[in-house]
Image 1: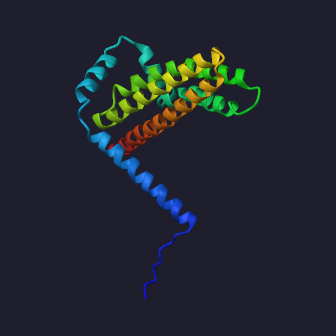
Image 2: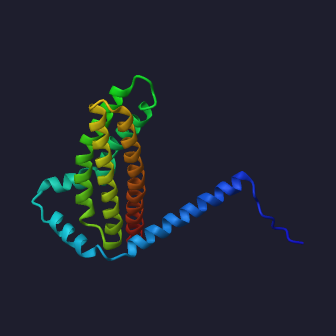
Length: 193
């Protein structure tokens, strides 16, 4: 008699769904890491960023005084503001606060991006490929939030909220990509020590 039976409970179906999504995501990241089509552009961008005359600012942007990269610290401002704005979007009478948080998030995106690009310029090819996708997703988020802010300031709050949903989706994808880059970097550092 077969002791294995197919578990069709809701929890088992949910776990199977998460396993399928996880497998798809990791397969996609693996393909992205191995896709070399953008490598010539990546090399040019990396060389260009490394050649910028940043002096001691480069060490600050890389987080050397802290002993770890500063980019993950700086991204907390836009992510926190935009997530908070989304929460306040469903609170009656909080539209002005959502608008303010959207604007502060946009202002905070610039220093986070600069620090991210400086870090990215020194990444090996596999991580640089995923990092470029991370940057593209961040650009999509900034575009969505800029459109959201514009709509909000023009009194089109529903349109502003819709743009925010698109922006938050791009931020989530970007965060997953950035987390993958950071994890690969950490794993690589441990492998060489």
